[in-house]
Image 1 (tube, rainbow, N blue to C red):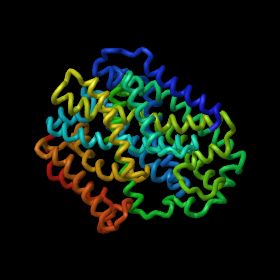
Image 2: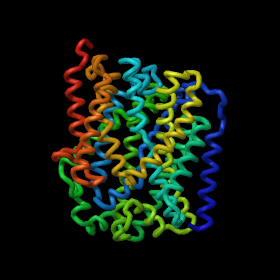
Image 3: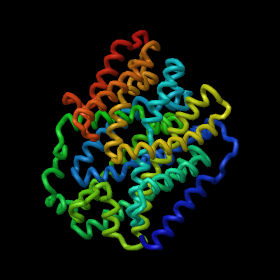
Image 4: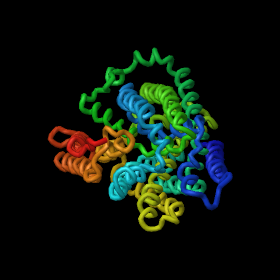
Length: 459
């Protein structure tokens, strides 16, 4: 990293603090701190949702480098599909609901025990661990330092806690607007230079191996279906719910998601293409998760390389700050403050953001892989949340109050036990299938059975 690049990056951090501190309110209400007063405009809605969705940028690069266009099939198309369904069936209803968070909505629909149980699941679901890991890797690469990535990861995570805690959701929105501009600009420049260096996308396509051209990337159908079902994450994603609840109106929430899908499609084209160019230009990499930084370092001159580093940094931090905030409010406001100190919900949320960062750092020590973290978290937690959350807004999925807690916890427990058995029987930390089944399936089947048995048929 050249000293010019260092100045650019330092300036970026200063800007983040300034825009987070701008018009800060010392004594904010819950609605203002958590949802920015529910006045989110359409452009701000799109900017914050689009940027938040792409925090796993290094994991995306790792996958596209290894398996080509199947990245779009596994990590693009299913999410477009479920996002559009979310826009049609859920976004408007979430905005009309008086609840500020998912646990509060579950408490109002079922009972306090259901809401309390959901806080633990959602707290784990929005773990910032994958994004803390990527920031550590990114800083270690660009500084060329031998310092352990945990040092860089810890410092950037704590910095995010600091600037988000200044203004809450307002800080998240303001920084996301800046970060989404950096995302698209940086990857557009990188792709332009890659085309100049290696030729048009049509020329590159002819040079790719069959694995990189295949829609499944060499994987079997069961693996594809697991990732497709993990895309159900969209229905229970607290970031989606938070932004829909914060929108100026139900129409803003619906339109915002439709616009976001279009922007996601464009950014997926950038990221897939960059991964394929990286595969051809760079050849073998010891650590494929660094394909985008490696390609940027290879193609970009001083100054532009610093700006591209900001592109990656901003993409990751846009999700990190959102997940830190969501996990902090889930554990702090929806559990601790709700039951013990309701008058201190904002301050407790801030402290729980710090706790979330610390737990995220501990988790990356166990699973030092972005893809593995996504897979484990999604496979274990989504089956339990799916039917209870859908039941809040869609009467067809509504459960009886007496089974709601079981519908939340039992599928997660089954999926977790299945994952542990798969790991123990294979002796591989990254092998999860037991008896030939990935853990998501028994978790989902358990959830479906509970819903069929415990569905509230009177609605």
